[in-house]
Length: 274
Length: 261
Image (cartoon, rainbow over the protein chains, first blue to last red):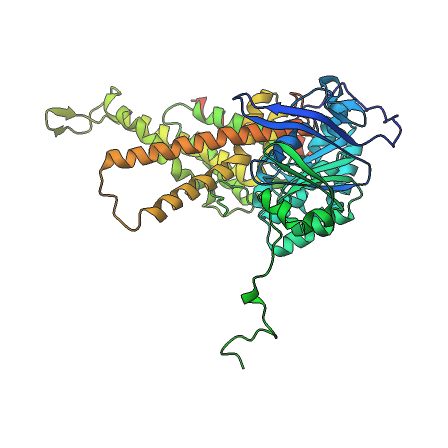
């Protein structure tokens, strides 16, 4: 990344003075249409309080990613989405983008700097923090995702699982209140998926996780939202939602199950061995 | 799937590797300018310049032939200068007849051609040494420090990052094409093949365009407002000044050797 040494003017962001009982995110009657007229979101209303881990599930094209992009004002930009009671209007965006850490689905879109260090430093540098703070936050964020040894590596040399952890570090370094993760377990092998779930479980931030991975939802999120064709169709207890096969099926979802033919009565033996 | 034919950095801990990237970049630029400005037939200066390349390879503990071998890639481009052998006025060496044309290579033309080829190869060799001993991100940083325009450096930086992604994408497209051509020889003629290649180029363009949108969103999400900031990573030390002084002496000797009678 090129250098630009003078500090940005938005220097240190003033601390949040709002009482912590206001919701972290409050979405009310949100509508959104793309420029080509395609209506992506219809009248979405929900709120998330501090400490919650909420799943956002729905079929492909339901509007999950579009909704995620509204959370820190990349799309939209009005008072239908409020972060700690701040409407997502232009004047608030620097604050809001530090509060809401968006992790994109494809790590190659999010890791755009030549080295891991520069990518993790990007957020804090653009918040206008002094260099010593930036370095300390980068160290802390990489340590949190267990990737401290990777600071000087080039992003394009990493595996998908490694990239995924680094993308989470790139927003942790901004010390956000809410992590919004778009399909975090997509494309990971079982071990990398397991490591990711453990990582997300340990992180203290409030989370909104958009995913099709209903087993991960069952492990991580006590509350789930279902969105289909741009409408919020369910918001409630994950156990209840996941046990309602009818509801899941009618919105193109299903809980994975092991087919009866694969349920072996005893340990599997490989023919030829022994 | 990773393709790294463009990764030219060779890790090491020699003096050359550890120098600040700014004097290295400036010396390389100065060396290339100095070399390209050498007059025709300044063999002593060209030899000195070539020995500088070899000396730096030695100090950097790179194989001596490393830069030479890689610089041969530039050879085809120097062939564009082939015509000077015949058009520069001088003593004709022989006369060749090819069909209706008569070619007369001249001695002055031959000297100019040899000079052009050596100047190009030596310049390319020094650039190869620079990229072999300096990580690319450090070079970008150095470029900003010597006031290369910010957007230009940003473009080079994104190019470095996404070249690999693009090459991977192109390889996937090629693989998907050969997987569907079912072993059949492409006998349907060059137009058909050109059409397929055109579609693939279009696909690549559209995909890159959409990706650039998503990257821009990702930058916005982390507070990008139009300026790119980076950490300070380099401090000029005494040895950098010493190396810079040595570089000035070397360049002066090369130029003096060319211009003194």
